[in-house]
Every structure is written in structure tokens, then in C-alpha cells.
Amino acid sequence: MERQDDNVLMKARSYRGILAEGYRLYNENFRKLFKASWLMTLVYAIVGAALATLGAIRMPNLTALIMALVVLILLTIVTETLALATVLSKLKEHQDTNSISIPLSWWKPEGKLMGRTLKAAIFSIPLYIILVPLFPLILPINYVVMKYVMTPEHSFWSSLWSDYKRGLRYWGSTFLVFFVSMLLITLVSIIVMTPAIILTLANIQAQHGLMIGDPLGMPSYILPLTFGTLALTHFIEFYVVLVVLVHFYYIYGSIETKETEREQQKRNIR
Image 1 (cartoon, rainbow, N blue to C red):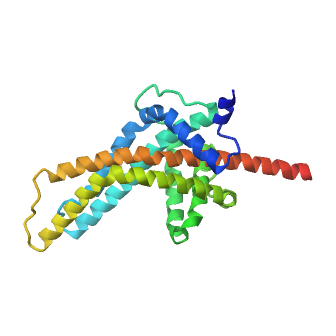
Image 2 (cartoon, rainbow, N blue to C red):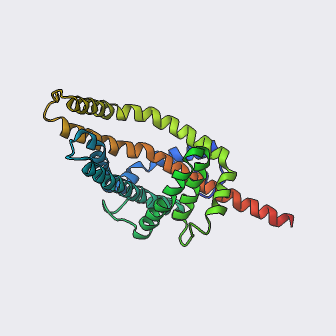
Image 3 (cartoon, rainbow, N blue to C red):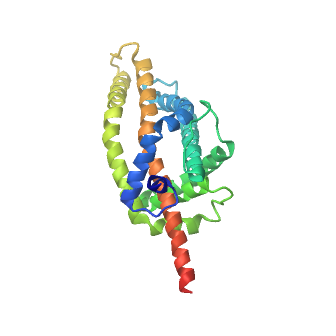
């Protein structure tokens, strides 16, 4: 029973509690999350690999290169958002039932939640860009996005300022969770991404050599090898970074609970 109580989303937690519960949920339900999301993640990995491989391809002119970049960047954002939405649908199930069920099929998207996740991405990307010079102020936006996706009928724009202030009130614990998560993810990502980085640097050097008249000096299979390596890297990296999403899910639950208790205390004082 105690374990079941610890598992609930809506519970006030310290940053250590959020980290511990996030890792526990991630580890215990990884197979379920993977089964629900692998197909869309594979599409994202292929599109992301195509974008990353673009630097190794000689485009006919600058216009073609820019057009290809724009199309692939947009497709990468959309496919990654949809892949995240498949995971968020299972987290929404956890919020509603305190458990995550085994997916009955490899592909069963939740249309409404995917739509809200796409809208959240469209709405929040400009905010992230605006706040880049003030990076610490970006963190509360993650709470705003999570609350919008997890709360049906909740408005993004009309609640933006109040939700942002609420997230800002807990900036310290949010930062600590984010910092620890990213520290561990960075260590793992260095290992995962090393082959892709080596191949990318080799391709850049080869293309630079071509520009100054040197022979390519690369085997004929280098392009498919680069693409395959980058696709595999994108696929694995998605699930490495996924733990941050789970942590922000628990940050959302903790903030909601603390704010409810705060409002209750105010009413009691009156």
C-alpha cells in the first residue's frame, strides 16, 4: 500500500523524491513506454538522420540546400513531438489510473493528446526562442506545457502567465531536478553519440577538402554508413533523454499538489 501511495502523481515531493520516483517509473515501465512509442520514434530517427546527413551531401545550389534544411527541420520537430506524444499518452494513463498498461498494439495513437502536444510545441517554441538569452527563465515553460497537455480543456494562452508564475515559484527544485537529470544524460550521451560525431566530423572534413580541390578520399559506403549510424544514434538518444520528460511529469504533479495545499491554507486562515 505504501508503494502504491508513493507511485501517485499528485503528491508533494522534494527534488530528490522527484528524481527517485522518475527513475523508478522509467525503469519499471520502460518496455511499455518503448512498445507504445518505438514506431514513431523510428520515423523521427530516420528524419533526424536525414537532416544530420545533409552536410555530407553535395547539393546543386544554396537554394536547394536551404529548402532541404527547412523541410527536414520541420519534419524533425513534428516527428519528435509525435514520438513524445505517444509517451505522454501513457503518462496520462498513469495520472488517471496510477498505472501504465501494456499497449495492445504497436501503434495506437491518442488523437486528442497528440493534437494538444503538437499545439503545445507550436505555442511554446517561440517562447523558448525568446527566453534563450535568459536561459534560467525557460524552465517554468516546461511546467506550462506539461499542465496544458495533461489537463483536458485547459487553455494555453489565457492561463500562460498564471501557470508560468506558478512554475517560477518552484524554480529552485525544478532547476535541481533538471541539472541532475542532464548531468547523467550527458555522460550517457557522450558514449552513445561518439560514433556519430566521428563520422560527422570525417564527412565535414571530406567536404571541405572537395571545396579546395582535394579528392574525396572516403569509401563509397560512407554515406549509408553515416545515415545508418545517425539513425541508430537518434533512436537510442530519444530514450536516453526521455527520462527528463518523466521528471518534468513528476514536477508537474508536485507543483499541482503544493499549490492546492497552499490555496487550502489560505482559505483556512481566512
